[in-house]
View 1 (cartoon, rainbow, N blue to C red):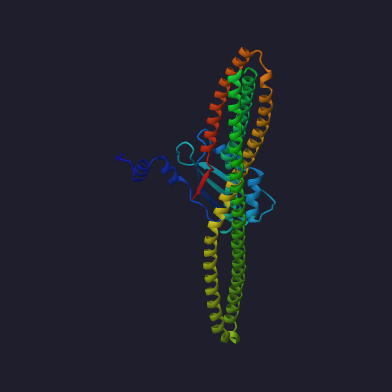
View 2 (tube, rainbow, N blue to C red; view 1 turned 60 degrees about the vertical axis):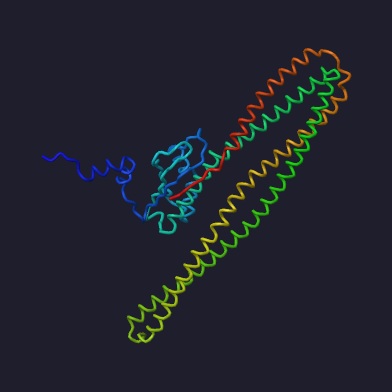
Length: 375
């Protein structure tokens, strides 16, 4: 008896488990099934994107509605059924999942056009949830934490200055004046930061307007070409019907040459329109990508401007308080030792807060928008 492995077994052994699973997957029915693989890059390494989470997103009302709207289906019965499965493992921060949609041929009336549209709509909802989980929410959390630590650090520095002034002799007063001058310089720097962020925001707003006009113009052109394609396709169907009628009626045979010429003309027109639509769709990709980038940067720039303005207002209040306290410094000449010790403890607290703030800001700067590949 021959105990050597079969050719199929050797193939699976050489290709490995991932390829073996791919070979074992049943082939898709192109009339009722569609699928795509989503590769997610740039996620924070401490965030895990798993299959149960994606399944819950696919089963959410928003995802169900997006798929139903894409195929123009409003019931009755169940909507198209989405599925998710994890594929090959990847390094930390990189995930890959395969998404599929199963349609009911009788209920959903799937076509070669609306099935990919439903899959695109489903992936758009999934990307929106992933962006919220892996970018928007961490960015908001880190930003809020940074603001909290910065305010805490400002309060500690103000408390330190207050204690130094209260405990100041002639040398302490000089140090208080130095801190006041440093605060004035911080205020000037904050004014420059506000002006810079405001100018950047205004530039992004202009770019958003320009990109929006380009995208709208491109979409209008695509709709115009789609209308012309529909008209030409209808004309082709009409001529085809007339040719069949002429072929069955000897009295109309003399019209066949003219009908054939018209048929060729409309076929050329349809081919030209299809080519024009493809070119228009390709030309629209760049403005759409630019608009997406601008909108993303616009949100970041708006938050940065708000933080710069809040920082400027906080420094203005601090400067006013320091000026008032400095004017009263000569009247405070008691409890100098205890006040100095309190100030030293606050300096230690401020060092810890500054370290925490540096760490949080580093995380915020390293946080990048999630990147996607669909194939």
